[in-house]
Length: 195
Image (cartoon, rainbow, N blue to C red):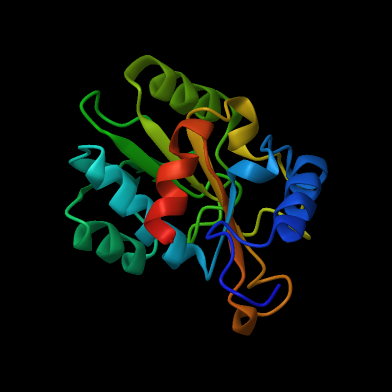
């Protein structure tokens, strides 16, 4: 039990997370497609390598977001393209030739807006139409006091959205506990990259 084991993480933890995420966030993932990592940054490092290995050249990011994330993506050789921001928050639909998009739809950091329903649908439609991938950082997704939390974007199409979550805000950052619900087509490659 205390050996290296499966690079995806302990099966019991992945099963419990898959069950919890389905109930609490509307995330659809089997335990086989859940990957445990040491934080959102670690998850982005894994995903950046997977995207680059699959031939991705760029990724759209929110204009106001964590610079650390942009640096991680750039370190993997991905060009970051800023998404426009207006009074309704981030306009998440990137240019057609974009390979992926990184969003915080539940609570955009640092602006604080929630991605509106029409924009959520539009970015998922973009991913389906172009074969693009959405990386959903569920920043503050469960940790809301100002209103009812919204469901995860991943629930709209688990095949084109990677859901990233963490226990840093709700429990403690020192645990270094985060997870990704990865589309089945990327699950093996993401586990191999982590492993």
